[in-house]
Amino acid sequence: MPSAKGHGVLVGAVVLFLSACAVPNAGGSHTEPRDDPALPPPEVSAPLPHPLRGEPLWTAPFSSEPKATESMFIGVSQKREGGAVEFLGVDHTGRTRWSTERDPECTGFTLVRDPNGGTELVVLLDKERDPEGGFLATRTTASAFHPDSGELAWGPTHVPGTLVGPGLVFAAIQGSVMSDHTGPKVALSPSTGAVVADENKGEVVLHEYHGLLLAHGEGALRAVDADGTGLWEHTDLEIPSELDTTSVRVGYGPRPAGDSGAAVTLVWTAASADEEEPLLYTVHDLRTGERILTLAPDREPKTLDLGDGLTAVLGAPVDAPDTSSVYVVSEQGEAPLWRRSVPSNVRVRGSVGADLYLDEDGTHRALDVRTGTVELEWDGPTELPAAALPGGPALVEVTTAEDSRVFAALPLD
Image 1 (cartoon, rainbow, N blue to C red):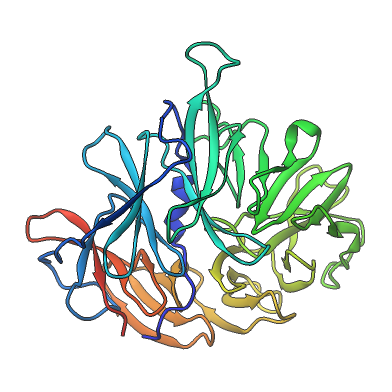
Image 2 (cartoon, rainbow, N blue to C red; image 1 turned 30 degrees about the vertical axis):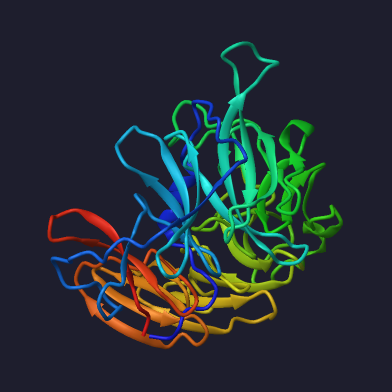
């Protein structure tokens, strides 16, 4: 297995976006420095999951799936159900370097990159008193912290509700935390935490990624950079030659499977149709608008950000619409790095480090994201790595001899 580069995000991590905040917390924008030693490695009762090898190094103190920055694991620790939660920053040796307490319903978090200098930041939610709303009134805020030290980078910034994504997009969830319906959304700048787009001002916020924003307003689908400079509009896009008509509309397609992505999927439909039945899908570089892929409408594409400007795409090729293919595309190129034909029932499980994981009815494959080479193939149920640091270790959820579930740190080959 190749050494990990950058950091990956599992598909399931998006669930954290649906967490809400209900009760104010005095923790606010502060963190506490710590130097807690690593927990002893777990005594594992079952064989370690593929594709990792070696003995567990230490037990991670997280209660739910963490994420990895370039040098730290970030995640939540909750000692009892319904009790307070702590966000922790844990280094590659298992030592906890900082923490900050949050209410148990304030567990939404994401990792972003400041476009001014490329610094990674972790963005956390909180509740604080709202003096303008009455004695019991609260408001939701977002703050960004440096993952290595826990130091505040910006915030708190007032937001209308929880993280709904893609990227630094926030909204109030209506009815239920699992509802698809939200109130007006806002997007924040990852550099400063300032509001850069607000649906209360007449635009529709669609997608944010490291300071790049895709929105719809005044009849135009347009992308802007972190300074608000226009990058491209839908009128700049060439109508795909695969369409036999120029009477078409183009809009934002399926959102990425993870937190966000450097590539966006657009959907082309007939301008005169009452129902928006897809005619074609295209995948574009968010910064330039350059079309990287053209896909048939037979399968709704799935995209997953792999870090380092790479995106995995699962869809139906226009030259073989009855089949499926996995591609990896780069924001630095106009063509996919590679394409691999896969059975129609394959799904993308997630990515960690330099590996992309596919699943086909219980058959698992780990592919090198740079080449598409199958690094490992195996059958049966398995836990995939939740997160990995460059060079290791990786964190994997395992069952202990006491029949409890913990995240074990395992070396990378």
